[in-house]
Each structure stands twice: as C-alpha cells, then as structure tokens.
Length: 488
Image (cartoon, rainbow, N blue to C red; front, side):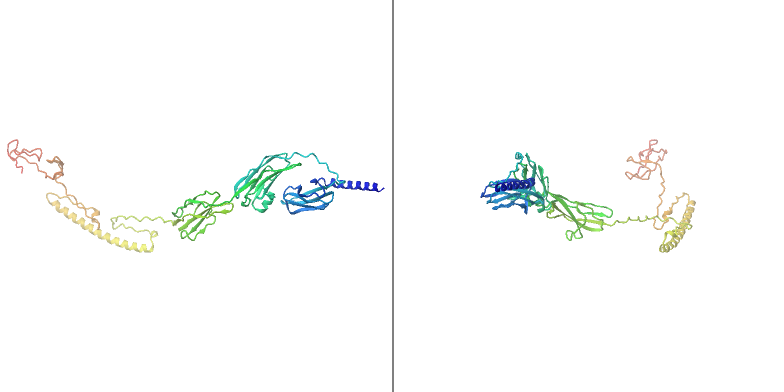
C-alpha cells in the first residue's frame, strides 16, 4: 500500500515538473549536468545579446542549489561553486543590458542522478558560424569616421561591439555614444559597421563582430582603432589687403589670401580701427575672405584675422597688415571764369545795360556807376575822334594845294583807344618796277634784299641818248658814239 502511494506521488511530481519545464522551454537557455561536489569556476550558462548593465541581473524565480553562486561578466552569465545536494535546479529572470534593453533568460542545472529529471529534446544544432572576412584596423584623426566590414557563413545574427584596450568589456555602440556626445554609429547588426565623429578617447579600442546561430557563436578578430589628435596649425597669409584712396561714390573691395596646410576650414574676421593696428573693433557679419568697406569720409584702417577650425578646435589667429582706406567728398564742378571781352567802341546812342533779373542790389549799384563812367569815357573819346578827324581834313586840304599830293595817313578806329598802340601807316613806294641786282637777285625796292646794293637809275649817253638795257650793266663807253659813261 505504501509502495503504491510513493509511486503515485512520484508520478505526480514528474508530471508537475514536466509541465513547468514545458511552460518555460520557450525561454530556456540550456541545461547543464553537474556532479555532486563537483567544483566549477566561471561556467558560462548563458550568453546575452550584449553586455549586462551593472546590477542588471534580476533573478525573479527559481530553485536555489546549495553551494552554487550566479554572477555575470560582460555579456555572460556565470556559475561558480560546488553543488552539495543532487537534484534539478532552475533559474529564470530578466537582465537589463547596457544599451537599456532587457532580455529574458532561464537556466536548468541537473546535479547528480536526479530520477525526476526528464531531459528536453532539442533540435539538431546548426553548424557553427565560419568567419570568411575579419574587419581591419582603421587609423583616423579625431572627429573623422571609420568603416569596418566582416562576413561569416551559417550566421543567423550579427552584432558589433566596441572593446576597450584591456579587452575586458564588450561595449555596445549605444553605450559608447552615451559616454561621448557627438559620437554616432550605423549598421550594428549588419556586415558593414560605421562610426562617426570618433573622439580621441577611443584611441586603442577595437571593433569586434560576433556571429551567432542556434548552435554556436564566434567572434571576429579585433580591428584596432587608432585615433590621432588634431593639432590645428595657423595658416599663412600670402596676400594682404591693400589700402586705396577713393572719392565718395566709388566702391572698393578688400581681400586676403591664406595658405592652409594642416587641414580644417579657414575662418575670417574683419576689424576696423582709426589708429592702424591698435584698438581693433570686429565688424559684425564680415566673416569671409573679402570685405566691401563703407564710404566713410576720412581714413579708416581695416585688418582681417585668419585661423583654422576643425571639429570646434581653432588654431591661433593670424592678423593681416592694416589697409588704409581713404574717402574724400566729391568736389563740385568748377564754374568757368568769364572770358575777357574787348571793349567795344561805344557810340553815344548805344549802351550795355544788364537786365534787372540778372543783377543783385550790389551789382545794380556797381552797374550804375560803371554806366556813368562809360558815358563819360564815350564822350571823351567822341571829342577826341572829332578833333582827329578835323586835323586830318585840314592836313588833306593843305596837301591838295601842293604839286605832289602826299598819301593820307589812315588812322584805324582801334588806334584811338586809350590803351591801343597807334599804327604807323606805311610810306608808299616810289618805284614799283622789278630790277635785277648784280648778285642775281630780283628786287622791287631801292636796295637789294640779298646783298644790300642800291638800285641805280637808268642812264643814257649824254651825246646820243643811248640807254643800256640793265642799269647795273652800264658800259664804260657808249657803243653808238664812243662817249665815255661816268660809272662812278
């Protein structure tokens, strides 16, 4: 009777345990067989998707095996100790991972020969993944990006991790991004993994790819990340802005050229000053390699600062030579001075009077005085002209009584002006015939214009009246009668 009761109780316990195992089989990670009093150290009983956060292992339910301790390191659940009592023990819970996600886990440990343990049949495991391409190391400057590529066969899951130089922690990229603002990544679960804006602190770290399937997992070789610190070097100014002198209305453009050999981006800032290179005042918005100064009358000095910037790191600023820009007012166009007009001969009936619209009161007063003076001068000139005419008439009358009339000297009207120089009338020539001098020159005056010899009168023979053809070729004796000519 008692044996039947024990058999029935065993069947009930086996059915209850089988039901519980069936219920938890979906989350079961594996079953491990240990012997009583078997010492184990660092036995990996579960592998999480990523690193477990500190204090992230939460054992919700389970049966405790005396002598065994559970712990986690990185992304692995470990068992340490020595089991004392035989039996079947299980552990189920939820772990908080370093990237903030959660993962369920369940462990079954069979110690000794447990008559109540019914092993759960598992499907045929897949072949372990085989890596066909390991990622390669990358060298870059801080703030730059890097790409890693890895491939494997028979892999159902791909995960990338960033491992510290000591190879102790497999860090999810999301956790690294939380440590270094600005750092980002793509492709954590693909063959191509990229990281951006890499900080200098990741120098010496490695990128590792883990390939997993239902049968096993395998890690790639670590691809080391070498990050070099960016040291911005100041650029060199090759062309300084040049000073100019302009008139308002004429624009000018100041420019600067700089040589950048250290990489990064050239930055500019223009300054103005009234004293040259001192008391520099930054000009708002003037942040390019050229600047158009305002047309301010006077001299203003302009200077530009140039530097290199890379990932919010700036080099020392280099300042250009000051450029003096001078602007002057536009000069009004000069009014042409009136040209001097010759004083006309004013008759008593003609007078020049400006219109009232064109004269001011002062000009009117001056004009009246000038008009009166002009009338006086006109009267004096008229009297003088009348006297001259009367004198000329008397002289002509006297010459008319003489046998040989003398030419009347003509007096021009301009000759009687007060400031004019009198014109002397030319004397009429008495001889108008052309004669040939002994030097061969032809003349119509009393003396030769080439040698100065006087002109001889035509001479004739005192006996017969014969006259030579040329007055300069008079023979010593008359060819007709032989009378001697006096050639002296």
